[in-house]
Length: 120
Image (cartoon, rainbow, N blue to C red; front, side, top):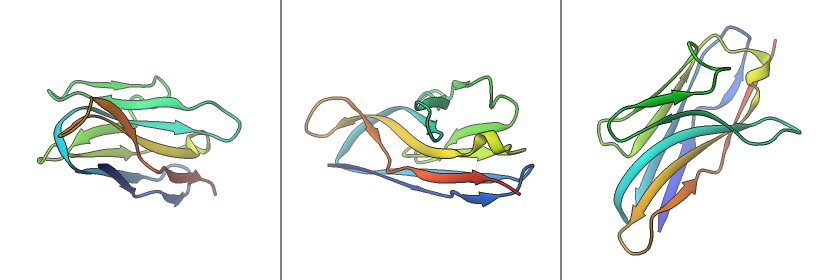
């Protein structure tokens, strides 16, 4: 069993910052790419940022230069530092982790989602 626990969402004013965290735990053999997706009301879920095992990152054009994705030293945690937040960043943010469990097949796991609201 693999669990993803997210934290760090909340309400912030435009121009402010938030840091999201996601920790993977359970019967894990290997963790591959990790990422953050977001879904605004009435819209499809979209990629925000991803990071590979060797540290290569990819960002949606809308967040480049403002968001930074990183992995913890233990490699089972992923962070999303969000700066210069805009109202259009308001969404539920989901952690996504590509995992090979100890027993089973490689699979994409999703966190429960954390709400980020940017409003004055």
